[in-house]
Image: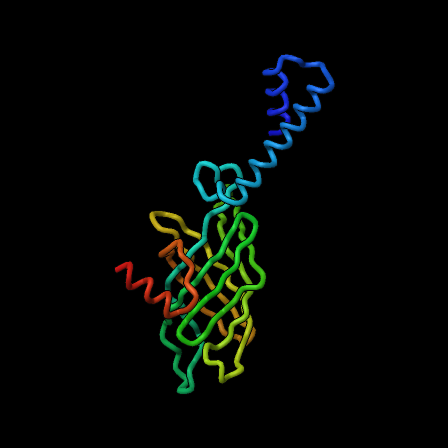
Length: 195
């Protein structure tokens, strides 16, 4: 990109061989390219036209869905599916995931976006630490989620998770807003306002 801008600059000026023109053209090419990439990384990547340069799906926002776990309660029965709110904060280079249910908060600490369009692979993989929302207890655990991104009319994430306390389950999520919520209750209010 910088080379093309440099050549255009030199052709427009019409002084192709002069050293000062070559230096100005190179400087202009590097400067314009740098500014473009800064703007692209900050904002442009979110727009479909510019997202074709380097494919990076925009997952930013609040997602709602269901968590199905194989964990068994004190009575030995499997627990019922649980409502879950997932908040993804993303820029071009990084993203972070926070999950909320009525009794725990999960925070990601390693995240990866696996995109291989020719093979049909679009996955979000992350390691997380889960803590209870009841601060009177010290229960916490860690786990990994591997979710497949599906984009039809609405973006969806679906896949499995595993924890270090030997439980696993399934997450099914749908993006509901570009906004970021800060709690399970705020997520529920956002969903009610959409109805």
